[in-house]
Amino acid sequence: MPEGPIAQGEIAALTRRFGQVAKTTDREFGIVKSDLTALRLQVGNLDQKTGNLDAKVDGLTGEVRVLSEKIDRNQAQIVELLTQLIGRNPNAT
Image 1 (cartoon, rainbow, N blue to C red):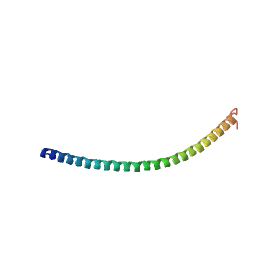
Image 2: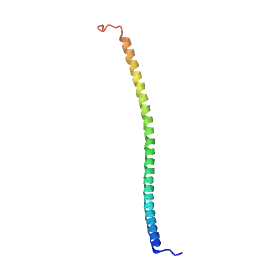
Image 3: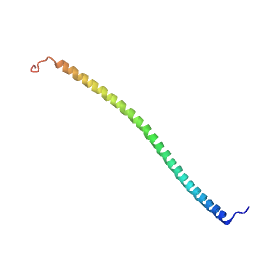
Image 4: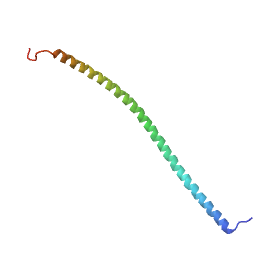
C-alpha cells in the first residue's frame, strides 16, 4: 500500500532525527571513552605515587624508631647522672 506524501515526509523527518541522535550519541560516547582513558591514566599515576609513599613512610618509620631509641638512651643517662647527684653537697668540691 503506497504511503501518502504526509507519511513520507514524517518518515523522512524521523529518519533525519534518528541520524542526528545517532551522531550525537556517537560523539558523546567518544567523549566518555576519552574521559575514561584519561581517568585510567590518572589512576595509574596515583597507584605509582601511592607505592612510592608506602616506601617513604616505611623509611620514616625506621628513622623515628632510631630517634626514639636515642631519646630513651639519653633520658636514661640523664636519670643516671641526676641520681648520682642526689645527696651531694652542691658546694662541695
